[in-house]
Length: 323
Image (cartoon, rainbow, N blue to C red; front, side, top):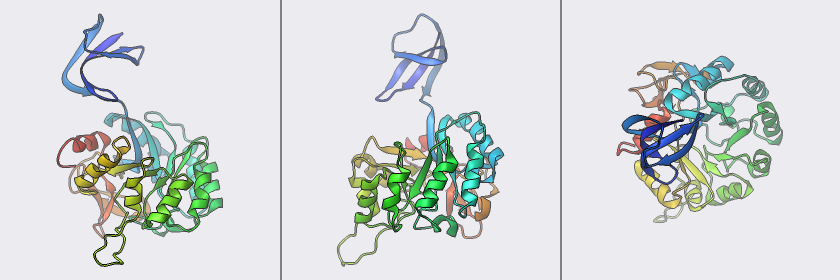
């Protein structure tokens, strides 16, 4: 048994005291000095292991580059406090996607625990940084084949509520208490509510690739997917807190609407965690980072292609005015 002294972050408060560990497990958090060996970490913070629900790559590794790169991401993530994550797979043409997903699912890994595979496409309406494969060939058979390919892991789908017929496929995706994410969408309120009723329960990289609806009545501010999501107490959201992807006021508004359902992700790309440089984002081409932790930008168009964040840096950003 051993105790660690510092600021311990629990579910509801930060305790300046002692975290007692026995056999590798936390058994108590107390302000009373325990009768065992104590390691004093001063003003340092002890936090639970992070979970990154949306990440494409890290360091020199891109999950889309194959099982070896995927395994290296798993091994590297604990360095940044991540103990579990959802590897995010970019869209591929039908057939290629199932074969590739099956190859990842069959790979033995060590390091961060894999909670399932996040599939960002092809059930999207807007491509964002992806190519046309992100919005091509969606359907029930495609969903079922991807679910089968991911086994023994879960397939966590990102969908756009304005994809025709998606409300019929969401219950298939959500079977077994599997979360279904919403993103890359220009859906209206009714489409979004219909998707939520069918089982969609989370919005990923919220505010990014969620364009504002067009004004159809002068003087009347339109509502769309963003407002429908904020208004539903059962839907959680996540943000990329790199100082560029989202204005801090949007995060504060979400915290007012749903204080226990706001998450932080990285949407990290290859090169995240490294010094500035140019890297290759699969078939999307070269990307660059202006500074460490910066947004990833396309070399060709200078548009956003994920981030260079690690989750520990994202948390630091969240606690500062620069988020």
